[in-house]
Image 1 (cartoon, rainbow, N blue to C red):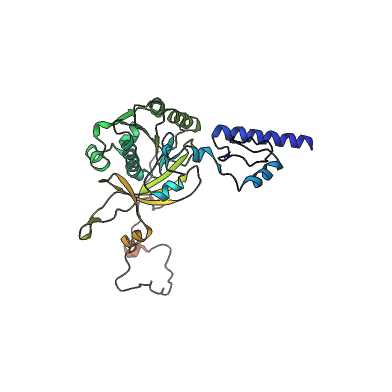
Image 2 (image 1 turned 60 degrees about the vertical axis):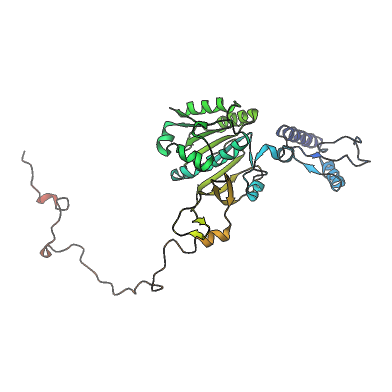
Length: 356
């Protein structure tokens, strides 16, 4: 029994140490209750005794204190990039972390344009706080040959990013792209660093993403990892957003929606991973005039797409006709009907033979 108690205390001590390192150790925001054993008046006590005393201590002071966790609360709103969508920011625990590695995932190759557009939308929000700093986009030759480069005129018109403020680095190999991203992530001369990867390469493992995440934390700059047609492999990014293209709504005019027109860019964003572990799926529209996101409601989604993809028959339901009688046909057609077998179908013994 004594050994079990010692082992249990050791486990509790290790858990407290890990929580302290990760910044998730519960802390008291108010002065401790008078009469609490070991309490120092006027001081803030952190942590709890181990074992059964922990539960008793929590029950005794639960009504008098407020418990927080540093990893989610103490950092403050200034540590997050607000997307402007309250539901999305709440599900992410405040928004996208500014000084961290964030993963933007496209499940298929055809989603590369939507992933790039969503990343540029986030970059536009980032540059509002750091308007004078450029952006660095890193990728391999395979990436840029497959998905292309962002259009310079579209950058300024849709996202307010001048073409000279977006720098590209085309690396011959993935190893070179990772090295460039690690060196760029440690610099404060960029507003953000974008690394685009295709597939699920072995070199993009936990070790590589941990280095990128650590460099981003030290520099206080965001690093956006764009994944094209890759699996949801484990990475060190605290946030993973799965992005695909959403149907664009009709263009709004003074007289109402313009029939047959194409409105603002739209994205379907699903939360694949976050610190809060709250799932969610959102349809976002990017406003190129205000450089901000707006959320499309479910009612508007149904109103803009009232019909099915395949229209119903004009005369109503058209069931399949009833089946008739089944007839048996001979397995081999008669040569009298003009049927001529191909050379491959003719018996081998009827074909010409080579002498000798």
